[in-house]
Amino acid sequence: MLHRPVYTSCGITKEGLSPDFCGAHEENQDIAALAREYEKALRTNPAYWAFKKLVRNETLKSPNATDVVTLARQIFNQTGGARQLIENHVALVSARKKRRGQAAREIQQCKASDPNALNCAERRYPRYRSVGPKEQLAVESARKTLESLITKRLNRISADMAVPLSRRRTPHEETIFLDRSFSSNQEDSSNNPPLVLQGIGLPSKGVRDPERLYLYDDQDVLEAMMNVQMNISHEQSSELGTFWSSIPALFTRGPSTIQEMARKFSLLSPRYQHVGVDDWVDDNPETFLAARIETGEKVLASKSLQQARDYAKNGMPPCLRAQLWDLMLQSELTDDLAAYTRRHCQSLKVDIARYDLLIDRLIRIDARQCRNDDCYFVFEDIIAEVMSYWVRDEWVAQHVAAEQKQSHVMTCTGKIYPPNGVMPFWGISCYALPLCFLHGEAENAYMIFRELYTRFFFNLHTVRLSSTPTLPTLCKTFEYLLKEHDPYIFFHLTHHLGILPITYACRWIMFAFVGILDIEQVLQLWDRMLGYEEEGMELLSVAAAAIFGFRSDMLCRARNLRDVEHAFSDLGAVKIIPLLQSYLFSR
Image (cartoon, rainbow, N blue to C red; front, side):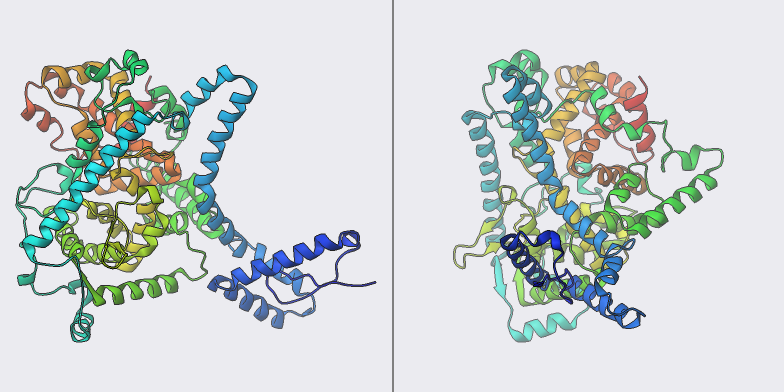
């Protein structure tokens, strides 16, 4: 009997084909060729060689060294092994595509079975409904207006400071730069713009210093959203036109009732135990936390992404949060994350030393805003380093969809500016502040930050139509919830006082409540957001609406802007998980 070679995934042995394959000669050739192609691709990944080395070492120690295939399969399938690593990687990469496909398939099925049922499917997945040319043009016009504003400000800052957008340092300057401590790796302060620190708090507080240097801020983004004007007559009847809404109905993403949110986030129900609730109101919180930690350690041992997500929906003990976030977020297929982190950040340091970018200076000024907060001021050096990595990391540009990028193409070189493809807004460093409580090293904090940014945070400062929750859709969801739960507050603020509730909620959502809530409350909210993946961003809308409900008495009595500001002046004592539970499940 003739035997043909079959290549195993570890690329070590060859084995005869079973008799079942004898009648499929051509098919076997295709399978073998495909296996060789896969192996060739895997050879570029360090995890492949680490697995191959592990199989070799175990083979030498095995008493039955001839049964390499069985041994390799056992190693591959062991708990927390290579199989789980690959499954996590595939799940992270394909999750968004699967969700889009699921919604699109449902609409097509409805259309095929009953054309009249298409409206029902589109109401469930309105982001897939037909968008007319007027709507597309309105959103595109708002986006281009914002980008034009950013470009003008960038060029003006460059001219005022007499600093080019990018400058190649001389070898001598580069050597001096690298010799300095990286946490203080900047030129003399005389070359930097002056600090603008008035004790006004983080940018998420909304107080604006007219002397600050910035490209755009939350107010610019809000104005861009509200300037999306269109004539949608069939939706004006339900929205009562602009009289009853600040955000165009075009940005409606899905069912936004409290009942729908309670169904979507059913595991938030008080019927389940939660970190952030039961660890401080339970009769025996030590027992609860001990059991929660034990379960979390089992999840970490399994290295299962899905188990970690399910675990996160009920909150995480602070002692396990950093490891669990690493497990849920890291999308690189590597067996040694620490080594990968060192190599990657070292390459970014070299690029930072080689080129002097104007954006670097703006980012350093932005990072200094942490001095205005008692919780975060000690992390200024770490934040500055994290944000410097972020500006230079082309990985960010590669992992943000093309339609999301807000980059400036330098005409002289044809390169993307800045390298990460994203123009920073005022206060963007706020996203990195909570991560300093998870990782004390800037490199480790950055690896989490870039994953969070490309997967979640980028959507919080862009104006676009998307299949994922974005700032406009989240703001629209907030409006729906507020009008359902507290219609009088919406009417009183909007039409009696002339104050739009969205001006507060947009800022809270855009900054993911950093600087608004206490740090532990922010992390607990982000735990749930990660657990529910992209859908979890809608919890930001629910949290904003819940805070309005929490302050309803003060808001109903408000007679001017000062009264409204006073109602929201101190939210640091708010316990966000109990508040969400009360808002969603108390009816």
